[in-house]
Length: 104
Length: 515
Image (tube, rainbow over all chains, first blue to last red; front, side, top):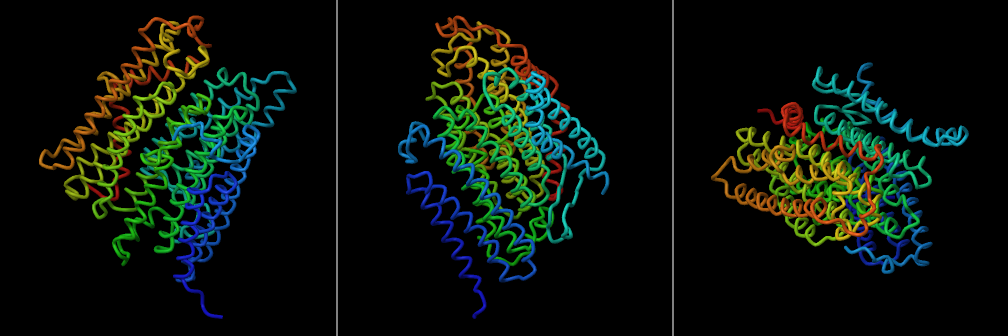
């Protein structure tokens, strides 16, 4: 069992962030958009924890931040899913192409 | 410590009010008088405004207040609250507009159902806003930020039986969440580098760090981009022109008047306090963003036919002025060092004063637009022509709002724009400042043209068929509009009190730089 490597975790966090943004930008499905948001949240939380490898003193507060951040992420996801349900009632679909009546 | 506890009072009052509103609603149903919840909401906003005035007096006496609420010692971080004049200035503004919107909503939202949820969410929104202005560490700020954001997503989608709020709210949610997560990412890097998220601790540690100079700029850009989504800086503004028209008018006033200001507040607070503008050149970034925001939004505003959409673009324009003011301040400090302190004070004071003016003016305009829409049943400017003739009180106040945002001299909006522009022209030799400020002046003239055009359409033209039968709205709706109109006139004629307050707030924001 080797010691955890900071660079590996920090790079994974950045990759998760980019994957999430890519997913939101490319996929035209409301559920997938929400999954993209959750992936970004995971990346950011991982970045908080990655720094604790370098410095043990950061650990207690970092855990506390991540725990609260997960709760906030869940609240955002549930609200987003609520909006998705309402959109499905209006359009019979969760395809974002059908939700393009508003101009950008 | 004991007296510092009063910092939490307004936040606790608002959260308790939000929890109690459903109970009050069922009480109201039991006694067959449902308006009791509206009265309760007004009382809660009044109470929190009263407790904020207590904090204001305390801050005037002591300069600043801090309060720790955590098992960790302040050096490490933990939950802390920090209040200075700038925070109190913003919190008073947030609460004041909340009070006006709750009074306005009594009649405006009469035909909607689920009003207990509406008022609960409105209270959480204002509690989040007050929390943001009082937060002393970044993570605490993030929590209040999300409380505010979540309630505003829900409030935009409040009329969920129509398609438009649902689409607008989803777009707002996705964009704003990406923004706040980007900001959280920046915070995680800051925490990893320094081991604390306490704002005053960070300000002390950042200059001593031995790191490549790109990393602080990466954090600065992530903070501007992250909170800039809510502040609706172009190119992160796409949610705003959809979310503002889709929300009920009272909520549009809250969103445009104070929620986007919270974004600007956070950017200013983090950048000016944590990153010393003398050492880090973020002023140029802010100035350029400000100019782009102004020009793009001004152009887009001209193309609109929907009255609320036009006002939404005009909000983006005004965010441009505010960002530009902060930017010129930071730029002057960066280029001239502490010698630029007087220019920076003038520019930042103008920006803070403009935050106030725009919150009052745009709150007034959205509430007034709500009155027109309530009577005419349309948001189309062509159909609304002449509505001001039929509704003289609303029409007159609405025109005052347009004139103050156009920067017509006796009104309050004139002074703040004057300060920002004067600060930009103080140093004639500096090409960057002179050119960008000239662009701002051009934009201000351009904006004044369409404000006056809007006023001419609403007030002077012959009434269209849809507004033929319109008449003045109920007193509870017209009262907030008229009071806000009076505020712009009174503060335009006697701006010295509020300017003094803005100046104290500026000195407190720039305090660490000294001068």
